[in-house]
Amino acid sequence: MAKRGESVLDLIEVMDRLRSPGGCPWDARQTHQSLVEYLVEEAYETVEAIEGGDDSGLREELGDLLLQVVFHARIAQERGDKGWDVDDVARGIVEKLIRRHPHVFADADADTAEQVEANWHALKAEEKGRASVADGIPEHLPALLRASKVHSRSTLLGDAVPDLESLDAAVRLLDSVDGEEDLGEFLLAVASLARDRGWDAEAALRQSVRRRIISIREAESQ
Image 1 (tube, helix red, strand yellow):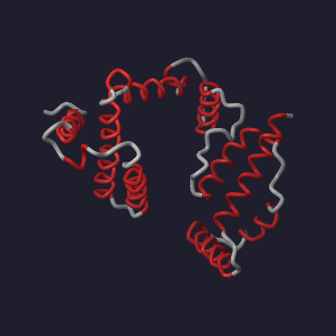
Image 2 (image 1 turned 90 degrees about the horizontal axis):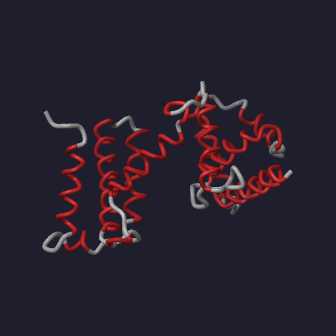
């Protein structure tokens, strides 16, 4: 019976062959930068498989994502003493998981998922020397996803951050929305109307998120 994880070692060996002399010219010329588009594409295809309930497709897409991890690690390994390899990647995430779960691996308390998330963000901020809960949220995330993450982080500050100016109006609008499907149709209609008026809904939301981050940092400074 094969030991769990053995196939990952097989993947590493295949990648070594592809990148070595006599291997594949296309694979051999790739860099971290040239692979970015494939990494992003595979991530979105994985999301599509999940949202579509495609179990076999999800397994395949996760394999493509795993390939990206092994590919990048092999490229870094080729830098010699200044590089790192797939074992360093795995070791790093193992250490992080243990460090970020003191309620499992140490004597900290966290009885709910919300407490776990709050502890995770606090530990992450401490490790990375971040001064704000809004630090570390990628600037180039899609605007809706970034807005959601900023809101989630801001709740850690309780009542210190003022409510959104349009919150009451949004509540009234969403009172007529019944579930996520209706919400999607509502957001699609908003985006369509914005386009008809010559507005960029994505850019508008990005600007609002930036203003929200400023409010969060002002509240933290006080």
